[in-house]
Every structure is written in C-alpha cells, then in structure tokens.
Image 1: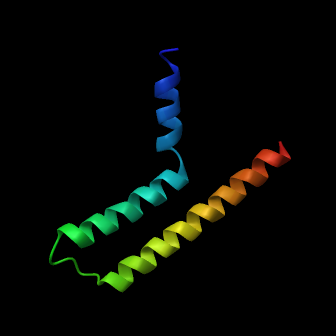
Image 2: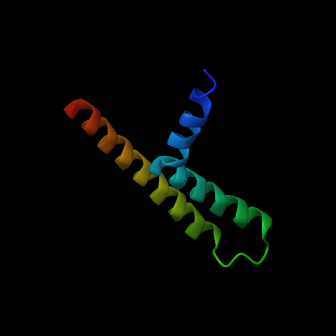
Length: 69
C-alpha cells in the first residue's frame, strides 16, 4: 500500500496534461504577482486557451490509446 502513492505521483509528474496545466498556472501567477511581467492580459489569456486546447487534445489521444488496447 505504501508504494502506491509514489507510483501515482510519478505518473502525475510524467503526464503531459499535468505539465501543460502547471505551465498555464505559472503564467497566470506571474502575470498577477510580477508587475513588470512582459506579457499583457490578452497574451496570457491566449496562452491559457492554448494550454486548455492542448490538454483536451492529449486527453482525446489518451482515450483513443486506451480504446485500442
């Protein structure tokens, strides 16, 4: 039972969806917390839209791989 948690965490950290969400969140936090952040709000919003589209695309691809076996 103790080995399940590290194995699941390893799967999360190897996930492309996790890293896309992490980077998107990082851009939002940087935009809010760093006054001299070089991107404006519209550019950060476009990065978030692109991250969401990527996550959905990867999820669809993962679903197809599971259905194939």
